[in-house]
Structures are given as structure tokens and as C-alpha cells.
Length: 530
Image (tube, rainbow, N blue to C red; front, side, top):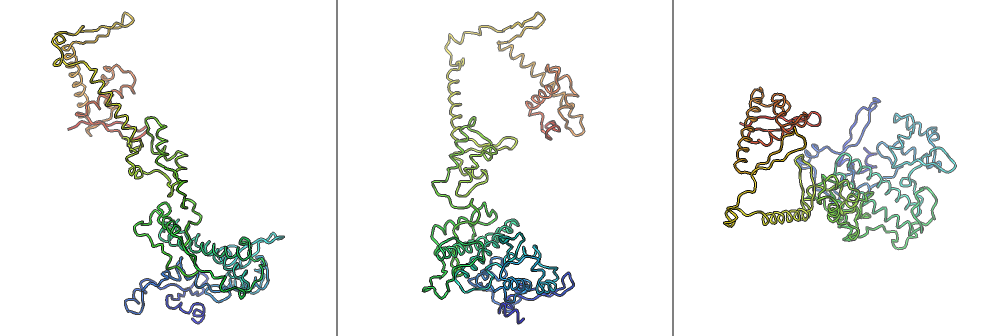
């Protein structure tokens, strides 16, 4: 407990210690936050205060602001950091990066790893502790060497050394936040990802500010090869707080772009837009600022107004090149030029949705086929087609012959010039074709034709009634009534089936036809209406 209080004097106020036996049958103690039920019990007894502080995150949270306010030195005691402290001390005493073989041969490191149940320092262990150690390949050496990151190195009292260590510490924290954000997005924890993104923007702004101070001090870019000697200038030489890392002001434009970035549906589709978190930076700690653009997400960066392409105009030009100004929604989303135009919008789009088209119903018309396929057409093209059809109907009406009621007396007395037209075909055996123009002859033909249709309907209804399920397929009807194909003059099975379907669909008041299955298993079932 005494060691815990030296590490964090107030640790006992918001955590507890848990002891358990690990897989090596050794007792191990960890420090954990207070459970929710225990915290609720303390609050019910009146011994705990749940009033949120200006820094609302807890010390155990992934977006904790206290990481910035309290970063204990590596050499100071911390829970579970025995190997880290010994390894850092050995590398500091050597004054240079050491290889894995040199580290594992050291007696102190052997003793520390044996206590922790490890065979030695490995690459896997270094990858877990990447925030403290880094692996480099020095010039003239082909083996991998380990050194301590400048953020945890021993202070040399110079401005250059302090600035390098602070830049490295902020850069490591930024890398850690980016990994956490990627993990949260992969797990669909969008609220947590938005909170981590906000913290990453603050850390990125701080990194830019420190790099600017470094360029102002040394006149060059930030040296990423940490560990090189810098010009020695003492902190005591600063003039009236010249190195004051105060919070930079955020412009109104940056604040607006930041708000749009947080509320972007493409990045966080499950984030409720109506209850978005406030973007004010009043609760941020001193020495940090809000960044007004995304990290590594170029699709959400602000695009100047003159570079934004009008997507509606692009789709209109695309449709005008198609026949009748109609194209399927799939063709629109797969067009390369239109996809590039979607990416150039202020909020990049992956595809054109039905809701987007419905919002622009004065320009586009959404059509749906019987199979459920969606097509997009121009409203102006549809109106033009309707206008032409009305003009054609009006012209046809004006040129049509007048009825007997409106005809003149001399026109009413005139009868047809002929009653029957007989057309002979080539060959003596072929019967001639007869066309009746007499009204009486046409009535007789219609009557005969009607009686024939009724006879076929009765035959088909009889076959359907004999079926136990009171329905049968078109193939079964053709097999049961083979005279239908012969009477229709068709020889092929496919042609007979097509004619029978036309006959059944024309008799919708008697039969019901339904298509079932797809491909080779597709068939048409027929049953009689009650």
C-alpha cells in the first residue's frame, strides 16, 4: 500500500486490489477500478459523490485526460513494471542500443525475467511494450537493437532534449489512440471510437504545436531518428516564458469542420445525429487544443466549394446518353465517372441510395419492375414522352372517319365497297385466305370463336378438378389435353406451352397462373378461381 501511494496518492479512492493465483500457481495482485454495483452501494450510503468533474474521463478509461496530466517516470515504481525498469536502467548505463543477446546475458535482466516467469526478453514482449522501447538497426550493424524511447529517457536538462522527449511522448500517445480507434471501429463501438477520435485530434494538435516549436528552435524539421545530439541550450535561458506551450485558439471555420467530421454518417453510421456530443473545447486541459481535420481519413476532409462537383448534374448527363433517358440503379453506381463524382462531395458517398433520389423527385423518377429491379429516369424525359403521345392521339382522332350519326345523308347511304376479300396463295393445294368485311359475317365468326374458347376452358377446368390439390402445371395440362396444340397449329412443345400460357392469362376471370422456381426448375402452376 505504501508503494501504491507513492505511485498515486489517491489511487485507493477509485480502485481496489485483487489477488489471484495465475497459471504458474503463483499469487498475483492487480489494481482494478471499482465495480458499478459497489459504487452504487457506496452512493446509497452517502459516502461517495458521483458529481462529474470538469475532466469527466476516469484514470482507467481509454480516453483518459489524466494520461496527459500525470505521466510517471519510467524509473519510478509502477505496478507490473519490474522488467521495464531494469531493462531501461541497463540500456541507460550502456549509453547505446543493445541487442537481444546482450540484454538476455545481463545478470540483472536474467533475475528480473526469472521472477516474472519469463525465459528472457523476446520480440513479442517488446511488441507489447512498444510505448517504452523501440527496435532499431544502427549503422554498420545487421542485428536488431533495443533502446528506450526519448519520452522515458533520463533528462539531460537541455531544451532540445526535453522537446525531443515530449514530441516522442505525444507521438507515441497518438499512435496508441489510433490503434484503439481502429479496434473500436472494427468492434462497431462507434460511441467509443468517436470519443477516441476527439482525443486523437487534441493530441495531434499538440504534436503540431511541439513540432513548430522545434522548427523555430533548430530551424529544421523534427528528427525522427531519436537519440542524436542537439544544440545544448538550458531551460534557464528562456526569455519570459518563450517556451510557453499555451493552448492555441480555434477558429470558427475549424470548429464547424470539426463538428461536421464528428457527425459524419459514413464514418459513424450508428452514431445518433440528434444527440451528438458537444464540440466545445472548454473542458480540455491546458496545453492541448482541438484539431479541425481528420487523421488519416482524407475522405472526410473539407473540400473547397469550387471543387465540389454537382452530383445531380452528373447523373442527368449520364441518363441523357442512355436510350429514353433511363438506366438501372446498379449501372449508375458502377459507372467510374459517377463514383469519382460521389467521392468529391463534401460528404463522400459510396453509392446512390433510394432516399437520395426521392429527395430530388423533381429531377429524377424512380421506377420499379415486376422483378423488383430499380431504374432511374429523368422527369423531363417522361413528360416529353407523355406530351408526344397526347399529340399523336389528338392527331389520330382528328384524322379518324366520322361516325354515322355525324356523317352527311349522302354518306350514310353508302355501303361497303366489298364484303369479302379472297387471297390466293402460291400452289394449287394451298387453300385461299378469306377476309370478311361484312358486319354479319364478323358476328358469326365471333360467335363461333366464343363457343370454341368456352369449350377449351371447360376441358382445362375438368383436368384441374381431377387433381387432388385442385391445381396443376402447364405441362400437365398440355399432356392431358393434347388436342389444344394441334388445334393451334403449333408443333414444338415450347411453342405449345407459350400459346397455352397466353390463353390462360387472357382468361384471368377463370384461371390463376403463378410462376414458381428459377432457372431450370421454373414452372407455371394453374388453378381455377372459385
